[in-house]
Amino acid sequence: MTQPLLDMRGIVKSFSGVRALNGVSIQLARGEALSICGENGSGKSTLMKVLSGVWPHGSYEGEIFFEGNLVKAATIRDTEALGIVIIHQELALVKELSVLENIFLGNELGSFARLNDEEMHRRTSELLARVKLDVLPDTPIRDLGVGQQQLVEIAKALNKNVKLLILDEPTSSLTTTEIDILLNIVGELKQQGIACIYISHKLDEVLALSDWVTVIRDGDHIDTKSAADLTQNDIISMMVGRELDEL
Ligand code: ADP
Ligand code: MG
Image (tube, rainbow, N blue to C red; front, side):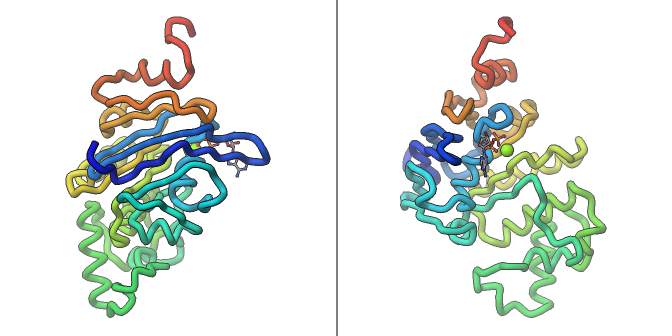
């Protein structure tokens, strides 16, 4: 790999002396998708919280390089400014506000701060078209289904000039149609050069979407392999640490 977009090296994260991550390293290039697989409690979300600045620089060991620069984020805002955006399983939209208001809420890029109403509507319509969501900018979030809200989250990320989109178990409450839409959109974002880190227990999605699969078990980095070389059973064996016929 020439200079990777993301290079996380030897990440160690402990909670009250207990190691949740025991030296995990991942790399990712522009336009690539990496899935992280592991059983519940293996450390997937913790790794993504380290990457996205939920856990600040100094609260973990190891180093994160993004576009070749050492990341020393103190907050999520700092990583968003770099182009790293995380969408958590629990949706973070404000239900009482509209799609447009949520997309521009807390946007500190500055460049949009001076947009007038008409420009914000035009910009929101463009973003909604990019995620193929057929609703009006003024629609209240509470009128949307979970899958639609997930797409608004992605539209919001696109408004922040995202370079790396992190989706932590985004499909657990989506219908199959909504999952297909989401996977298609991630595919299109990859073609636009946006990298994606994907966490899901649904291994068919993992194999359909990823270039690389990293497996972690009890905070240990087990392996990273090309998705093309893996079956669902291979991934499960790596997750549990045994051959399937031994189970
Ligand atoms: P996963 O996302 O793979 O299910 P997590 O990263 O959420 O796993 O959790 C990994 C381990 O770290 C678990 O043992 C969990 O209990 C622990 N952990 C995660 N967050 C915290 C926290 N804020 N405080 C204490 N322990 C935590
Ligand atoms: Mg998790």
